[in-house]
Image 1 (cartoon, one colour):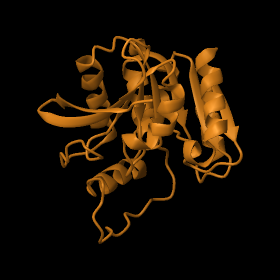
Image 2: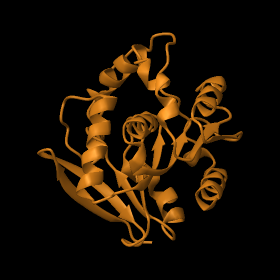
Image 3: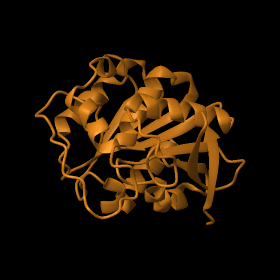
Length: 229
C-alpha cells in the first residue's frame, strides 16, 4: 500500500503528515510518541488502510514538521484542531501513543463531537509521581527538537488535575491498549478506563510501552476488533 508524504501549513508553520488508504475512506488520525515521528505508524497504517484513510501527523518539533521552539500538550492539541479543520475532517477516529495519547485525551475532552472513536496506547493523562529528571542531550543529531523533552517533562512533573477531572467528557467509544511489561502503572490505565464512560481496557502481556512495535499482531487484533464493533 502506497504511503503518501505531504505537507500542510498550519498557523504559519509547516507540518508533515503521512497518508495511507483510500482518500474516500473514513479518516483515522494517528499521533506518535515523544522523540518518534509519523513513520512509527507505518505498519499500523498498512494494516488499517484497507478500511480507513490513515493520516499520521508529525507533531510539532518532530519528523518533517517545524521546529517551532515552544511545546506543550495544549499546543499540540491546538495543532490537531487546525489540522483536522484544514483537512476538512468533520469527525474522525483518533489513535494516540504516549505523548500523542495525552494529546488525544485532551482533544477528546475539548472536542468530543469531532471524535468517532478513540484508541490510546499505553498512556494515562499525566499524574503526580516522582519527578522525572531531564536527561542530558545526546551529542548525535536528533530527528526531533530536543526542546520538546524538557517542555513535556515539565508538564509530566506538574500535571494539570483538570485533565483527569474531565475524563468523563470523553463520551465516544474508547479503547486503551496497555503493555503488560510497560513501565506505565497498570492501575492508572484501569483508573482511566473506569472514568471514561464507554471505555474498554486491553492489556497485551508480551509488550512494553511501545505495544504496536513489541507485539504488532496482538495490537492490531485488539484495534480491529474495537473498530469493527
